[in-house]
Length: 353
Image 1 (cartoon, rainbow, N blue to C red):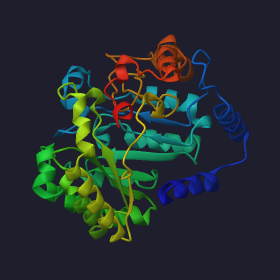
Image 2: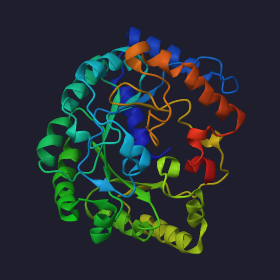
Image 3: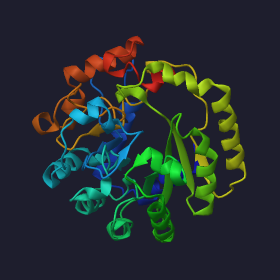
Image 4: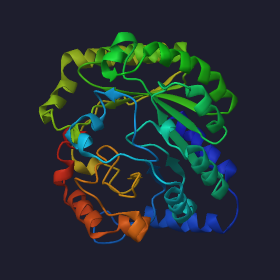
C-alpha cells in the first residue's frame, strides 16, 4: 500500500461518524469480504467505490484516449443531470469509501460538478472524492479553486513533457499546463488535496517517463502514476502492440525511470512494476469500481466505457445494485470465473500483460 492510499484510509477513519450508516457500511463490507468469486450467478453487494461520469465532453484529442477510436467516435455525448447524480448518491453513499467524478471527458466541464461534490459530502463526509483533469482549459484555476475544500485527489493527465506532450495531447498547450500546475500546487497543499500525475505509456512517449518524474519533483506534485496503454477500446491497433513492453528499449527506460524516482525524494511513483501472469482473472474491475455513464448506463469497466458495445443496464430503470446484478452483468462475471475473457475484454492489458 502506498502512502497516498494510507492517507486516504486515515482520512476516511478520522471523518467517520458513529451512526446507522456506519452499521450499513460495515455489513456491506463484510458481505464483500465473503462474497463468492466462484459462482457468478450469486448477487454481489454494493461497491465500495464508484465512478460517476458527470460529463464526457472534452476539449482535447489525445492519442491515449479511447474516445479517439471507433468505439469512442460512436458514443453519445452529454452531461449527467444533477437529479440522476443525486439519486445515485442517495442509493450508494452508505456503502462507499470513495467516488470519482470523472469519465471520458474533462471533469471541469461538468455543469453540476460543484453541487454534486457538495451533496456527496453532505450525505457522508468520509467519502473520498477524486477528479481527473487535463488542466489545460482556460479559467482552470477559477474552476478548480471552489472544489478543493471538497475533494481529496486531483489527477492530472500528462503523457509527456514539452513538445512530446503536445504530440500526444492534440489541442493542448504545455506552457498552459505548467502555468496551471504551478498555480494549483500551493492551493492543493493549503486544502490538503493530493496532486497526482497520470501518464499512459505508449511507443510514442515511453522515453519521457523519467522526465515526468523529474517534472513532478520540480513542480511540487507529490505523486506520479504510470499506466500501460490499454487496447481494450482501441480498434485500430492489434494486440501484438503489447509485445513492445518487454523489449530491451522499453525495459532500459523503465530502469531509468526507477532511477529518476530514487533521485526524486518528494515524489511517490507507482505503476512501474512490470506486469506478469496475464489473464482476465487479474482484473479487479469485474467486482468493484464500476463506472456509471452520464446517461445512467453501466458498462463493464472504465477502461472501455462504451455501453453501446455492452451494458449491464441503466440505473434510471432499476437502480444501481439491481443493474450490477443484471443477467448481462452476471454473464460477464461468469467469464471471469471461468478464466476466459468475454469478447468485450479480449484486448484488455490484463489479458495480455
